[in-house]
Image (cartoon, rainbow, N blue to C red; front, side, top):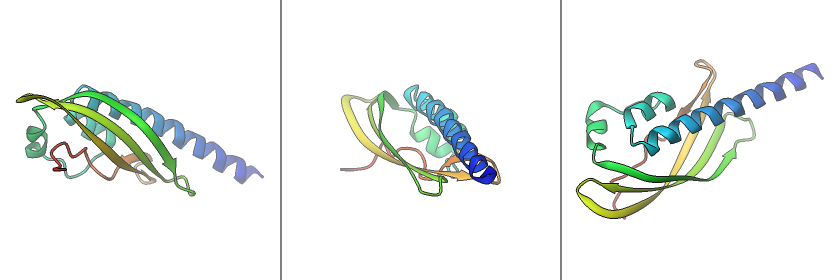
Length: 123
């Protein structure tokens, strides 16, 4: 019984940690602060060239649509709708970002494994 209680407490703690990280990530994206978003979410592979390419992106809105927790409590698939413009255009653009988050037990934190939103994806 104690192990089940411990596991439930750990899962709640992970859930609270995810909520905090997801909110900090959302805030960084809303402010188009992609460097901060990379740090908050632990995104690997985002180099200075990638961050430079994102400079003209200005996020207008960021709305969480859904989040689904895996059975083992170590993965979350979050769907987000993002509206944005590019500095060179007044056209409002929209993307649906499917975020894959994974809990890394070594770092004891959630990591965004799918990377930053692809604002330049051709439709």
